Length: 311
Image: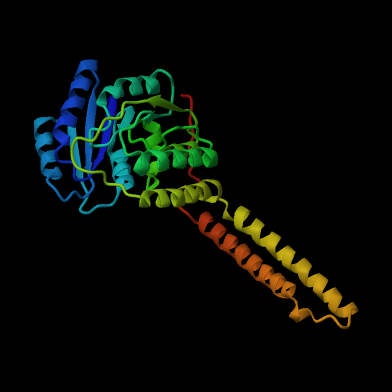
């Protein structure tokens, strides 16, 4: 199969028929073999009934339904599990992503050799205050911290090589950082394409201001897990050792002063409590790293590495 199109959706019953019809026209026009995987993330409207109707009309459409709302990351992860295409395309269900972008995205993966191509909504039709300005700040911060040079990290329109989606796991709210996850999994050939952003025709956006706070916390989490997930002792052990040594030096100085300076009252100095705090925190961090190392060593995927072989 050439292309799998994974579309997470939540309360998008009005846009689904037009979106699927548009995708079908593009696929037929270019002669692609394809499947459309619609993942209903616990919609409370009639979205699932629409999905079932579309399935009955087009055998290339597959529907998955969550019993409750788990979030976009869970929907994408389940869609990735079921995808069979050589290239996997993701897009939102609200008709703001254009299916006409699919052929070029497919070409960039199959001919240009990219592992992942992310869309860049250079011209947006969202509110400047609600989305545009915060998105620019968010993307600039992510580029700086992750080293992935994309202008629009959270664009829903992306293309992946089959191996990429099978090698990564998307959970929580990590869908914002799939390019970062892919990079840390070893897929470094990441490209970008300017795509058309269309005005929303039906319904309302499902995201609020909290996504920026959650997004920053998720970025911190993924940077930590990517760097130290298999070697927690390198972080906690190093910090713990430095703090303990600092506290020990302070304690040594105070002990010297107490012995050789008879009028010196060690316990009345704030420095005494600072040194004691450093040693206690250092010991706790070191133990945390040790316990993390034990957990990491006993994990079922501790020796799971991505390998490419020439047959």
